[in-house]
Amino acid sequence: MNYIQIKNLSKRYFDVNALENINIKISKGSLFGLLGPNGAGKTTLLKILATLISPDDGKVEINEIDLVKKPRQIRELIGYVAQEISLDKILTGRELLDFQADLYHIPKTKKLQRIQDLIIKLDMEDWIDRKCGTYSGGMKRRIDLAAGLLHLPKVLILDEPTVGLDIESRNIIWDLLKNLKDDGMTIILSSHYLNEIDYLADTVVIINDGKVIDQGNPNYLKSKLGGERISLKVREFSSPEESEKVKEILNKIDGIRQIVINSAQGYSLNFIAEKEKDFLTKLKVELAFSKFEIFSLTQSQPSLDDVYLQATGKTLQDAEIFMAGKRDLKKESKQSMR
Amino acid sequence: MELKQFNFLFLYQETFALTKRLFIQLKRRPSTLVAGILQPIIWLFLFGALFSNAPKDFLPGVDSYGNFLGAGLIVFTAFSGALNSGLPLMFDREFGFLNRLLVAPLTSRLSIVLSSFLYITILSFIQSIAIMFISYLLGYGFPEFFGLGIVFATLILLVLFVTSISLCLAFILPGHIELIALIFVVNLPLLFASTALAPISFMPAWLGWIASFNPLTFAIEPIRVSYTSSINLDFIALHAPYGDLTCRNCISLLFILTISSLIVINPLLNKKLN
Ligand SMILES: Nc1ncnc2c1ncn2[C@@H]1O[C@H](COP(=O)(O)OP(=O)(O)OP(=O)(O)O)[C@@H](O)[C@H]1O
Ligand SMILES: [Mg+2]
Image (cartoon, rainbow over all chains, first blue to last red):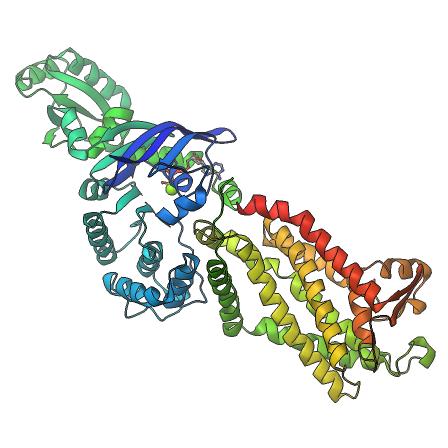
């Protein structure tokens, strides 16, 4: 059953297409991962889901409620934990939760119990009565997550909830998310950590430059790549030109496909070798013929990064570096103010 | 448009929470309150001393300048507080805390406005009472019961008027720097172009005209006459160049200003808040 339906969703900021014709379906009780490099449009999508910004085009329904037409009903369903944590420095954690509970009209009788439950679940007893201004990054993340969970939302939206966290805080959050999912909550989580998505998500959408590249179960996406993942180097650090030459050679060999030059790893060549064909002997011969040697040849299980690499020709890391240069952060923070 | 199920209990709960947050902030950082009480008292002493030898006929109806000044300071303090009321909202906007309020299913987002209004009103009442009390200790008298009613009614109207404008600016202006600059530019000139420090009869004609259209004047004069014993609403409060205004006239004018500003501002707040 599709609990959340996103149809032909688009959003522009002046000259930037932050989201282009996005179509996503999310089923109830699933943990849905949104994977993409910096500037891919993750936050934009999540802010639309949280009714903070309105789409230019397209339609979103949660539980058959139209998000643009009935934002207040949607707000009752969702809990939103923003990428940038903003707590009130002057309030203690407990006061903040109390404040949040009142905004969600939680009755007095239930309020204290819920707050107490979350304090225990997120292991916050020791510092909950200190002012938020004194919290560490991990504490801030945890209290912010607790605030998003107070009203027991049907849908929890998390924008990069574990960025920059210590292992302990991260594990607490991961465990909690798994438990919440088991209790039937639908969770949407953005991340640019592949392992996080791999570990948590049942379904993943990979977005890049505002467009959906691929979506499905992480294992399915990986197996779809098929074959064996091979990474070949003819030198520790090749030049782009050299890699191009090697790529031409590989192109001629039967049983090798989807060759990508990985600039992040010394212009190594990544490709898929079909399992049933013996490409190795042929590869050696062909390389020797063109005076190349094999510096290293590694084989690996397909990862989500391979899925990403296959789709875009870049590793996730590359894409981030590229996008970082394109953004005008000052302008954005001005414009995202409401 | 979404049909809102209006639930007054919810409205109360969210408004109470928002107001409570402002008061917790005040309690832990009381410098605004302290400064807001100290400043007018310093003014009262300094200006009171500065003009203590002013000729008697300079001041209509009162016997000392300190006596005259009290009303002006009460209004000016309330006015400054209300003018600054947009600042916390601006900071919430800048720090993203406002998003926390905007993703919550508030019964009405006007509760954000309502809480600021409640907060500033209570704050300005506390400050006014402090000023009135000090003036009393200085021998400048104290309003009678009905007079006090006039003082607080006038203050509520003024605070509502100015707070709504300030909150509106907090949504329109790009950041707190601009808001502070604007407050800075508006604050003192409005004070000097009112009857807070000197009566109209003392001003050059052009300034008298300006002062007699200044909303601060409409608030100052009823409060000033509220110190007179046996005050009633038909008491002449202001000798404006265009004619005499009674207490009732001044308060009505203030009322009209407040209502019109709310009517003008409401669509904008709705747009920004929905
Ligand atoms: N307020 C804004 N004004 C103009 N452009 C914006 C604004 N917000 C985002 N953008 C642009 O839209 C695109 C998507 O941004 P978004 O914040 O959604 O990316 P993201 O995937 O969340 O990135 P990150 O991983 O860095 O958080 C980027 O190109 C960004 O520059
Ligand atoms: Mg983001």
